[in-house]
Length: 118
Image (cartoon, rainbow, N blue to C red; front, side):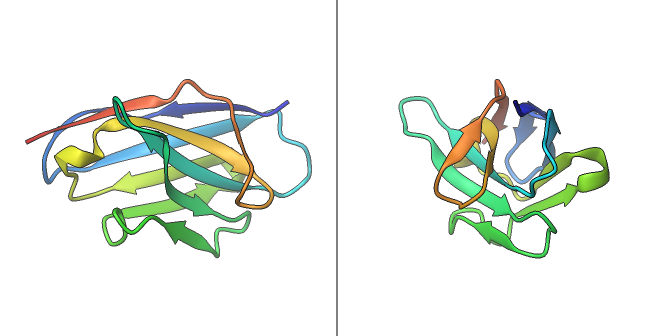
């Protein structure tokens, strides 16, 4: 069973940067993609970004394009989300999840809180 652990969140001023990490364990030899999602208080969870197994394909929500970058280090079983030019509306709990088809995601971590002060 895959286990995921998000980290790297914190409090940052608007315009600042953070890098989130998603460490995976218990993986099989099958390839998998990883997505980042976030959930703000009172709102539904929303897609942020995704990256395929090789790292050659990435996808972003329109709201974060040009500001966030997703990458991965398969040797470390870790996926990163570099977040630049942060805005107050980026405040949320961020989660990572694995997927085989970009439609069904398996969440396993507790998430990491990102708070952007204006």
